[in-house]
Length: 159
Image (tube, rainbow, N blue to C red; front, side, top):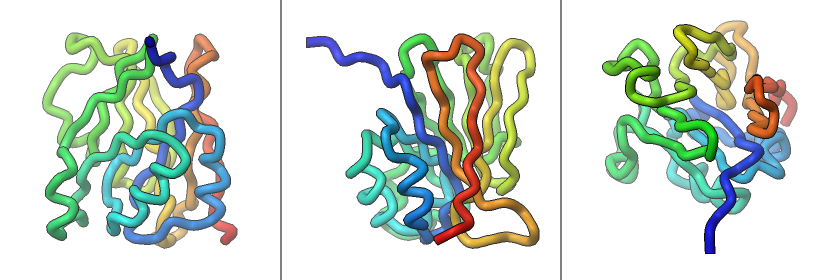
């Protein structure tokens, strides 16, 4: 029996131990969830796994014993796209296009955004955890059925 690739992917990062109910609502319906690090609490990954399979990486605040099981980088198979996941894009030590990746998902900066360079899409879902400075509190949804992949950023600042 083959498993269909996910058509809707939920993206989040930098929860720092806070998983807002609004973030969980925004991720409903996702068939895969990618957490790009700074999880802050293993219970967050458990809660996300109740919604969908989770691919998660370790961020710089994930220093407790439970977090040592998280990889520094991971690959998410999204059917037509191989997604490279890491916490801080500045630590990217490969050429994603040459390595066969269509996307790179990262966090760390707390600034949501999507750019394209050299045929590779770079997405930062922003921070879903405690507010930092005046930056927005967001998660993202990625519809893989669209041929021009574009993340939809969702404000989850409400409880």
